[in-house]
Length: 148
Length: 392
Ligand SMILES: [Zn+2]
Image (cartoon, rainbow over all chains, first blue to last red; front, side):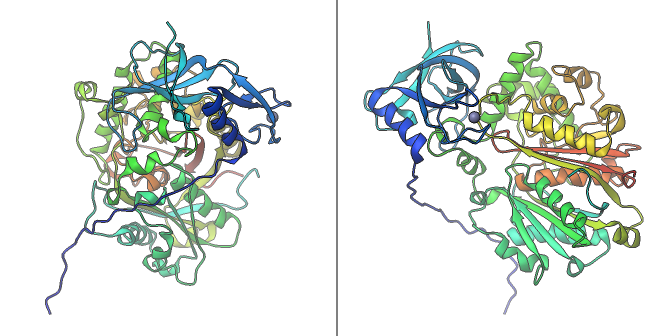
């Protein structure tokens, strides 16, 4: 038998459905987006920090958090990037911008989108543009736009 | 913990040939290539290794869960301690540091750290897009360039005199250094013009500000002092290690001056007796997967004041023939098998302090710093490698 020494490439595709449990904090957060067009966070009494999206526990003191606060759907851009090339799982067709926005009343940056990146700089004031049909997802906020 | 409990030496290093696609080997074959070269460099057989520590990035990159189950045979790990770990982009460094701990504990005398990535087997950016929180984060940071772009933009906002051209010069330098490194993946010099005119990936990052994706692996054989004295006439020595993690998107997070990296740096210098890093060290391999990161990491590891890395870089001090070379190997910007990239920083430091780096050797290196970052800019690992055992 002739010896085979040819290197080959085998092709395959992996597809796997998932269903993620949200847990208490994110579950409530997503429900408020859907039902109330409200952005809510959890506040740590000990540290005085408001975390959005909320976590069940404070990153500094590890306390369980249960003091809900509503924060504004407007805030300030702390950083951004205009995406010019398409990537797998991209939420929009480029060009669009990823932004990190510190909502008024929150102590954390929230990562989201700006559909129209024009005019956005670090420090820009932006506001949430909500979807009419909301389903309890972070994308119930369609995108952020400049406050003129 | 202050110091390692006993001295740890590096008596062998190995790297694969790095390429966009290594179709001539499968994953175990790739890993074995680095391990064999490392063992050969140390003058021992794989069978003589006491224990293995493996590291690689998310399994979705290669599409094989529990890759360690393939690697027992490939490495000669039969009936030996073997563990695999993962800490984002720092995993290669964590692998090396974990192997150091194995030696320092006194339990083992010859421990091989092996890390790898065969990125061409899958779609790297697809894998990276799954690294974010599925409940609220995944839509907003596809791939790695966008994350590094958010960091670079914040740096530019803080220090408005920094331009995209400043970043481009780092890419030009690293790619010129790679020409001297026989193991570097991308061997193509760049001009400033070429970097500046390359297409934007995610502003302010252009194509040539970004690392490639590489198939490759690396290995280091760590040993006790006793074994090093017997087996090696030119070992390198681990002077100190430190690692630190922080959360993603927490109140007070600073991605330009990460608090976890500042803490790891303080601890590292303290453990190694370094008071003036720019004087006490001779060079560094910083994990710069994107060109702006040379500015950001130089400042965070205390080699430059806040906002002043530009002085060091513009004066040519970080060039391969400068006073404090950064990434003489060509760095991650030239070679990026993600899981191995941070271990390659340690390999390069070991080669430099033993005078065995070849064409990209920096003359007279006595102490070198290996740095890496991972996750949402939240995992940091550092190591100082010296030509002599640590004092005291
Ligand atoms: Zn707290």
